[in-house]
Length: 409
Image (cartoon, rainbow, N blue to C red; front, side, top):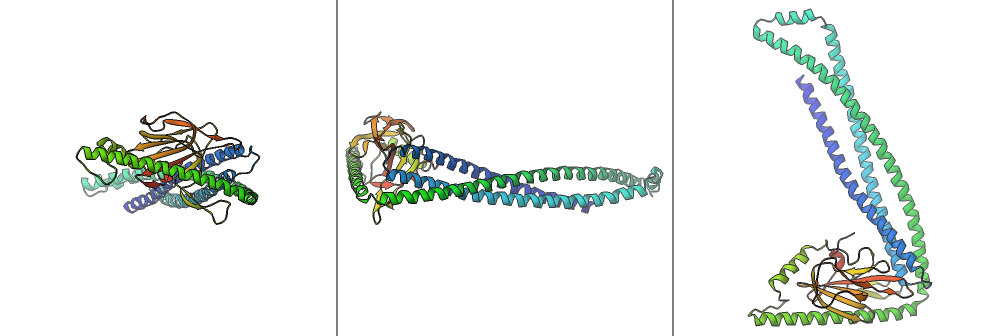
């Protein structure tokens, strides 16, 4: 009887490990579902922005960038679905294995129970049991025989209950398996639809690129103006940073301290450390949007052989949207840069965040700013149905990639 009990414990341990594995997979599925919903939300927003852009009869690079953003999101969505399908397939395998183990266990329990019933049938006479007890050599042996008869009866009950419980559990697992298989079939069907849509969008992208390539000189002229505006913005930022460093060093020298870097008060240092600690968790500079131009050097989306160097990132958003601060700080400057609109620069200790493309600003130099505070209304370029914010993050004189700092939606 002890061996049987040990065997049952081992079987239930195996079932427990399978259930634990399913719990981990369920958690992974939940994360994938969350990611999938975010990507679907991004695609819906991009479609809305593209619809607005297409109201402009003239084809633009902005339309191409939004289309590329949507294609990237859909590729990520399909990839996420692939992972989710693999997770579900593993779940199906685990449940099927669990079902097989339960069926084997029920078979063993029934065989053992049959033996118990057969033994009970052979010794069903109550007189035989009484005689078995009274035939003992002494009172101690009689007590042990009585306890054995009681334990045997309890064991019969426990075996019967184990069979019933295992059958109920088996039924639940079979039902769960059917649901998971249906879920997998629905996901595969949805993924196939996404692949078909991706194919349509890639064809559309190729068509847009061909049409834009026919406007090469026009695009070069626009790029030249854009690069000039970018240089003006960078010079303005560098000038403001240099002036702030000069003033900070002069103040530090006056108080009897010297520093080669960016001298900071205890309060500024605390703010700087807090900003750094929130890397990857800072809010977006707009309530909703999609990244259409990334940080660093990239080939021009249409013009062959031309490389664009972006000091920050561009986020396309809806008409009438406002820009907002990504962290607490103090306004260092509000400037007007031709080609960049009104620009707000906010100091966060050693760090500086810069927000461009506003036509109306709500703050002024010296204002104390809080996280997510609105800074101004973004420009809606006339005739282009294009609204975006350009954001840069600097540490001293070093440009940083804002994508690494804001929360990844």
